[in-house]
Image 1 (cartoon, one colour):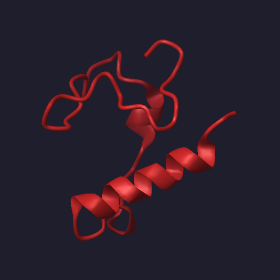
Image 2 (image 1 turned 90 degrees about the horizontal axis):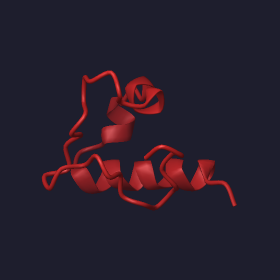
Image 3 (image 1 turned 45 degrees about the horizontal axis):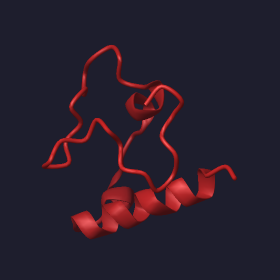
Length: 63
């Protein structure tokens, strides 16, 4: 996504099983590489982690 990924929009690099198709590759955006998940972010399940990411996106969305 050359101009960045807007909040609430699915990343075009996600595979059908929600994995990053460019993980570990040089073209992976710095923002993705710098994200450091920690236990509080991941929680006990996928729903918790996705809700946390949604809150991050909402907090950093530009209008």
